[in-house]
Image (tube, rainbow, N blue to C red; front, side, top):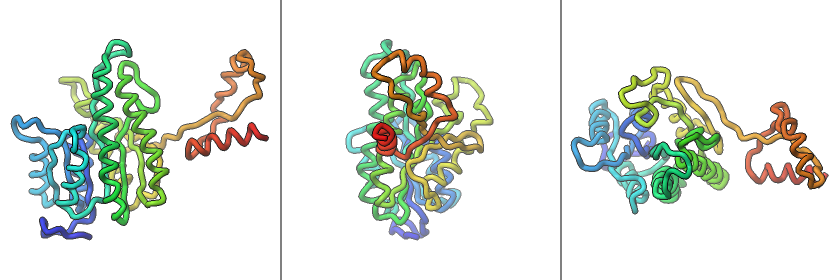
Length: 298
């Protein structure tokens, strides 16, 4: 455990959580704080009225937990470095990131929205996260159990009608996280993806009662595991809702051919080629290519 001059108590972990004033982020930050971690709780603040993050930090302090507030907009210039520096200054180390901040963007079909809408969604949902990761990597390498948890969405796996910008940002984030996991495994930094279904201000319609089956607090256990010492997974994707969880694995069908460069050959067999009982998964794009190429060579 580490002791920092700012505090008289020891902390067992230092965690930075973004987008954490309410909903999922609040649940993740509160859960780690309750378990003895020092938590830097980030959420943008426009300076009007009381800050929800300050109120959360005060509540956690009253319960005997250690937490500090950060008011940066994650996409602001210099925000990534400032957040990481704040965690180091407050807790003396950084062990885990939980990158949760995101916006849904406009509910518009492709062609109805402008480039500005896509740019804003990508800035917050994708580029801000990549900047935080870059700023944090040197410090995470000093941890005995460094973890990065990317909070994403199944929209990035399957797409979603009317939310192409959001789906694209999450798809990019998934690809980034999986690549990062492969790169950092040798350094002991484990990177995983959590795709939650939860009743939050982003997913619940105005004035509608939250669905009790989708309580954000029920996702916290998955986030704690994936960002904790006990987790040995890396490059994995998980869907969680309620108190249930499942793994998501990309699959490819068994190879079919040769098709003789004839499109009709493929068209006649398309359904059979994609049969579920012939599917298989791969650890990386390199593995997928190697398997395909080996069958071509055979």
